Image (cartoon, rainbow, N blue to C red):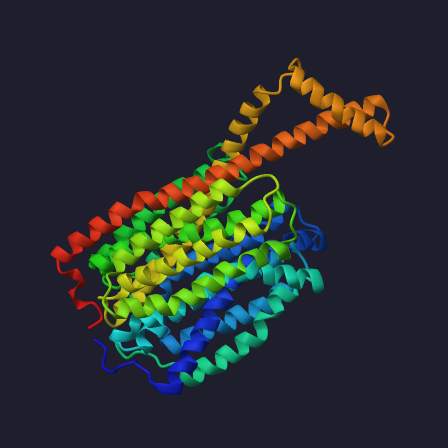
Length: 525
């Protein structure tokens, strides 16, 4: 049991909150900032595209391995010490990433940076939650949510600016001053809870740690690399899928039967946390999926620069930031979390349907503004109620354990989302290309007329007839490819929207059941 309150007041609480948010931001920004620098890394380190994509994969694997273990590690070493050590690991390996001479050296440093970073996200959430009294926890989650929602959006424009104006190592170097300040503030102000007893070495669940690392690491690899390696036609993907399935099964068995589990699965008996964990997965799918798909579309189809693509997302992030404290206040006044989640899902469906309607091979920039404002509104209405619902009836050490589950599921939701979107787009692209090609038969008079016009235009530019004809066919083929790609993006928007829409009845039904079981009655009072 907890022997002292960790609730803070006045300037001390403000400093702790700012420190925790900066650490959460550091971690999340770093997961997306690298995306726009891959080309520069590839040229500078002499790596292939397949090799350089490991810079993202290694970080994600490090993240999802450590996240479920953070509550246990906090108990083992003391939260303040573990949090400070995580910041130091993250900061030191940021410096080493910037100084890497080869691609595999960089990949190793990114993996260890991911181990440090994963802890920052979940421990930040626990620190903020416990620093506020129960009646103000909705507002605490609103403040924390600013970092989590804005982080993925902030990465690409910041990365684009740094790569355009400096060199790629600086995307890692900018972590160093923030990391040093955050470490000093953590050691000075963050307190460790007294409810956790340190385990002796012979009591540590090393088998659980091994099973968790193997299961989650294999799963993350399959999700990150599956599409590129053509899924189950690759022996590696097939083997690691089997390893992940058996690893998860034996990990769950181990944690439910051992005296000192590394991850306390029994905390999932709490109905609110169970629901919140599932909703966190869906939130991660929508958050990371849409953050992935929009910059990809505007760069590949509309030929925008990375900086322009990243800047497009800023109004949505500001809308979410504006909404966070408002939603926190609404929750404090007693509005049910599940109603806000359902409304947020309706808004996210509207955003997705809007995206489906506006995408063309030459959509103007203005067409995205209000659509993305709607996305920001929906995200603001989803994040805080889901997190608040998940942790609302947990106490003491359970808060850290619950935050670990929701954090891991949000991360895995994002990985599943990106993997599924990439695969779905590739298959839809083939379907649309085949359908469009069937309307472009060589003996079709309209096609012949179009080719003839294009040939004449190229000849007017000085090309010989045979080169002009070849260029006309290439241009027609490129137009076909562009059209098929845009239609695939449209399908993805509709897919995400329908998925969110289908979840709404489930969310509302869950609320009714939980009320009957009186699980919500301890709601922060």
